[in-house]
Image (cartoon, rainbow, N blue to C red; front, side):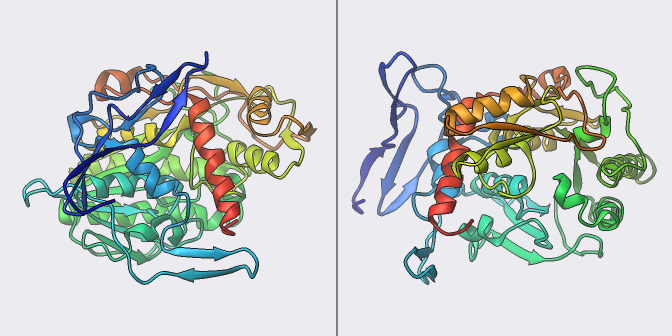
Length: 423
């Protein structure tokens, strides 16, 4: 790009399902001035001219709008930022010089100091990207059990960003305005690897972060989970449902840990007047998922990319609802900045059986793969579907991303990670 004043647009063009050309450049205009990229959107242009392809994310009501092309440059680059991979020698070279994507310039009264626990993980890193683009000061703490520095390396050295290796089971002192508490392994292989540590993370980690929120008078958001509903007898699951959880099963370390975390959060609100928010997150997928975390989406995509059989546990008739990562981040930021203290489900109510989803990914990625069935896992929920009227009414939120568009990005991410020698 030249340094003189020019106006350029995204080069992303595609076709509708009936083959007609459309161009998503019109809603997303990137301005270059004196060699710097400037951007700004009202939030009104969510879709391309086909009315389906999403080109912006976020909500103007909380100033979280960002062009999708800018975010894709961060999490889906053609080449990984600041590193060069040589497949012939399988070596990586790191570049010293670096630049950063533009972030909003906020006045001191608007700029918040935000702590994100578990911010190097899948969900946390996408949340950090959005908070950084919004112009806030962001501090991440992570013990890197499942989180990865690679997820945040594009912010390393930025004046608004700080990454600290720390385990939330130990106290942490900092002055902040908001705390997004995400720290906890969320996939069965990871949280079952050390169930005692999982419980300690949910309980002691939440106590430590609530104690911090109490001391510095910060707003606290707990990312809870749909697993608090267990194997539900109510369908779909509304926030008023108390759940059906096995307290001594293999999933209990996570399920009951999150239930206790919610109990602690409301105890701190009632006893110490901590300003709290609680999000119950349903199945989420997207770039930066761990390729071996045992979740349905990453399992199926990696197996299809490698030409392996897609494995279903049980009869495949258990159901799940899958939301794309951008929808979840939108919901978390909205919830943090709205005045509402009851739990809120964040999930996509479109429901698939596991077999249907396996067939969908196989057909999208590698139709030659077979689907095989293995014995079911203990306490695997038979049904999972969020009731989201509370999110719609209170937050003005609902999922926008079609699963097909999200899967396409996720497949592309894993392909590029494999090509770059990162997985």
